[in-house]
Image 1 (cartoon, rainbow, N blue to C red):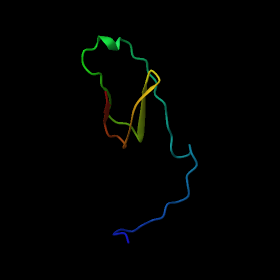
Image 2 (cartoon, one colour):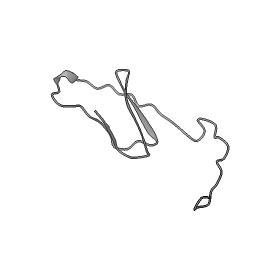
Image 3 (tube, helix red, strand yellow):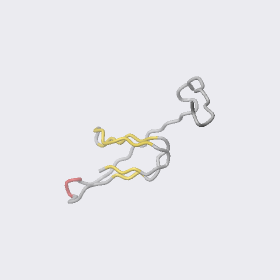
Image 4 (cartoon, rainbow, N blue to C red):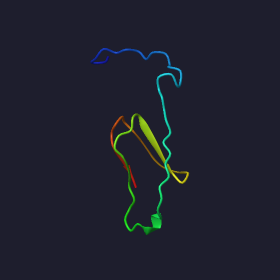
Length: 72
């Protein structure tokens, strides 16, 4: 028993109809070896989720709509 009104899941929604996604690609310049401290990548708000890859290597994953996340 649930302490609230329970609604069963509806049928699956076809991909791409109501769940848009995008890819953001950018080029950063500079030599990372010149930094003496950790380098942080900060996203101050991402809708749904973010996968971070740097130079083709997976760095991390975060989710929760419009919640900040930080990778180092």
